[in-house]
Every structure is written in C-alpha cells, then in structure tokens.
Amino acid sequence: MIDPISAVIPEIIIHNDHAVTTSIAVANFFGKQHKHVLEKIRALDCPPSFTTANFSAIVVTTQAGFDKREIEAFEMTKNGFIFLVMGFTGKKAAAFKEAYIAEFDRMEAELAKRSQPPAPVIPVFPAGKEFSYVTNVGANGAPTSITILRNDQLITSMSDCVEMLRRTGFVVITWEVMSKLTTAETAQLWMDAKKQYVRNSPF
Image 1 (cartoon, rainbow, N blue to C red):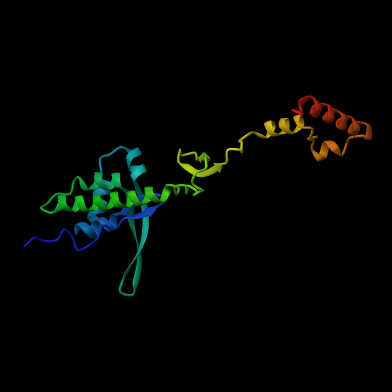
Image 2 (image 1 turned 30 degrees about the vertical axis):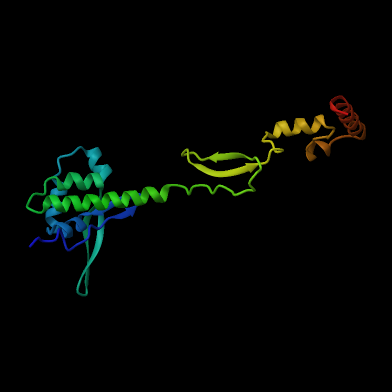
C-alpha cells in the first residue's frame, strides 16, 4: 500500500503581490515540530541579503482550546522555502518538496494572470468596408485599447488641428487672450483670418 504524500495541503498565500508560505505551514505539511523548523531557519547558512529578501519574522495567534497565545513564526518566499527544505531528508521528503513547489508554481501562475491587463476587445464592424485600427499600448507593452478609424478619419496632434483650422479661415484663440483684445485688434484678427482663408482656399 502506498502512503499518501501528506494529509495536509501546502498552505501558500498571496501577500504583497508575492506567493509566500509560513514556517507553521511547512511544519504541518512535513510533520515536524514548529520549533524545529524555526531552529533550521535561524541556522541557515545564507547571505544576509538572501535572508532579508526571502524570510520575514511574523507573529501568529494560535488557539488551543479556550487559550490564545502569540508565537513567533517566519513567512517565506518560494526561494526561501527551497533553501530551507534542502536539508529535509527522509523517505518521503522528496515527494513532499515536489508537492509544495508545484503548489508554489500554481500560485505564482495565478498571480501572474491577475497582474496582466485584459486583452482589448476588437470591435465588430460591417463587412465590405475598409477600416484602420489604432492600438494604444500600456507601459508594460500590452495593448490596452483598440480604436477604429474610417477612411475619411485622420489622427493628428492639437497643434496640427489648430494650423488646419487657421488655414481654413477659423480664428483659433484662447478666451484669456481674447478677453484682453481691443476692438481694433479683434477686427485685425478677422481680416487676417479672411486673408489666410482666401490664400489657402481650393475654390
């Protein structure tokens, strides 16, 4: 008869956009006393930068019957977990490690899926007509939206729009500037716009 890997499911959560587990969860899954797991974490021979990046001391409230007490524990990343369990030996240790790492991979894949923006919906439009697409791209390089342009539509800048309006006889001026114009200056603007229109008119 083959024994199951563990009666306990690997406990991995998302914290601050990272998949993490705790020393308590590891102790429960591997069938070890929590104090022994803490001893192994404290005795790890790894650089301080690695320890800081992959292990965080936390306080956990536990309950035994009606009594509650706070105990020290560690939260760890996937890299921290792998470094810790490298020293776990025994008949089932390899299978236990594999199951835990597989759950880490699953949680990290789920986290990556959450962080990706939804793909833009491509609009549906009448068949037999030609259209152009304008795609907006976010900072991460993924498309964020798609806009359809008809053949008679153009994309231009604000300055180009102003120039086009002026060439077709429009007076383009801000309200702030216009409020300070004298009657003579307003009349001059009208004359300039008329001359510009006549010069550029195709008719």
